[in-house]
Image 1 (cartoon, rainbow, N blue to C red):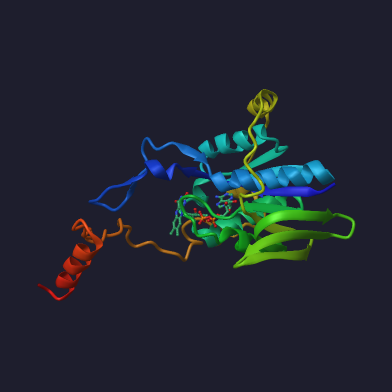
Image 2 (image 1 turned 180 degrees about the horizontal axis):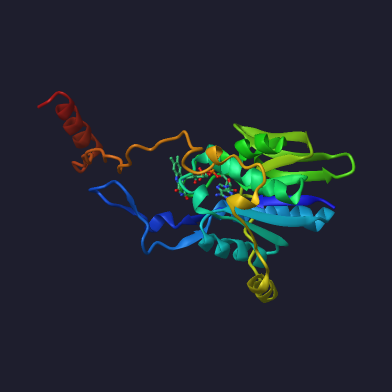
Length: 263
Ligand SMILES: Cc1cc2nc3c(=O)[nH]c(=O)nc-3n(C[C@H](O)[C@H](O)[C@H](O)COP(=O)(O)OP(=O)(O)OC[C@H]3O[C@@H](n4cnc5c(N)ncnc54)[C@H](O)[C@@H]3O)c2cc1C
């Protein structure tokens, strides 16, 4: 049976995020948290594989306790199990510490054949997690996956298409393999009532730093994060341009010419 892991993240709805102009801090109060939209596409791809070849789909997220709601949303859409990695010690993590923590927590449940990630998150948007997790899991990786053509569990091979500049590339990779998913062929699944009821009652496994044997506390959270963000500020907007419309092309060109000449 294929063991499939899907990494999902709960993110603030960035359309509603504002920045405090004095401090440069993001104002998170009152901003709803949502499932990272591209992770719904990653889940959809994982479920397609399960539907065609069988298997079990496990979700994992690292985040605050409230991230449980993102997991329940994914359980309602068809995932089988969910793991919430949560602890204050994981806070203030950059991507290096996040990928280490997620990989260490995931390994508590054994090894996975396929690992799915969204292409990037709505908030951090580094797009680094997929590649970092592939390294951590010792897995091959296919980034920007357009379509999964075939999974051969016996031969331990996956064939998938990925989008490249000006075309499509078909790759074969050995299992275990991590894929980051393009949304085009894997639309988000809409949960039905049965799924919602099941998700409401589902047990979610919670993992804290103390639950992970051998976890190096110097590699998680703030101490494990070499990336430092000294300041955040909104981009300076360029000066508004001037639209020249003198009523005709000839008159507009004449006006533009005189402006360039500095008249
Ligand atoms: C100095 C620093 C401090 C930070 N402090 C905090 C903080 O205190 N709190 C905070 O929330 N963030 C914090 N962040 C942001 C945090 O590091 C990133 O959100 C996180 O590492 C994931 O990176 P990303 O969002 O760029 O993911 P991307 O690489 O853009 O995401 C790609 C995919 O990886 C998977 N993924 C990403 N994040 C997770 C996750 N947490 N769980 C499961 N799967 C995931 C998803 O499938 C996602 O689609 C901090 C970042 C820095 C640099």
